[in-house]
Image: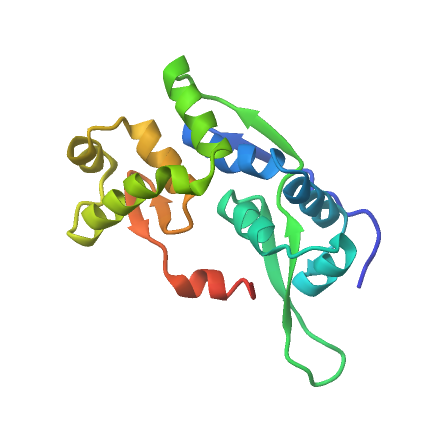
Length: 181
């Protein structure tokens, strides 16, 4: 394993205010931030991270993955053992280019910093709507009487959803199992 400093020089461009939710989650927690910092200088497996951190890093990896802040690749072992996924940060800078109402920004900060249980009801409602075929942000806004940034913020917070353009889709459980967490 290469242990030298390999900080990426890429900039994460945030055009959608809802993209702040995973960023606030990641950097609003000491553990998530420390995991990010470890991954900014080294490619590391989950086991290596847990050894360095001394805690379970499953949630940190999920949040960093959901925010598009880390990348992964397979590490091939020297002997004939099973390959293991290793992780590294994708970005070292952020540039925000959006405008929103302060009410919307307040909602997004609340979504990012509150407990997941605070939003379970709306998550279940969004999931029900998606299961019956209502996947567009506009359709979900109408059905749930919420604004688009709120719906997208909840989707960015929850591991149940994937945002693809103006659509919300249910995340396949396999995707998170592929993280080896």
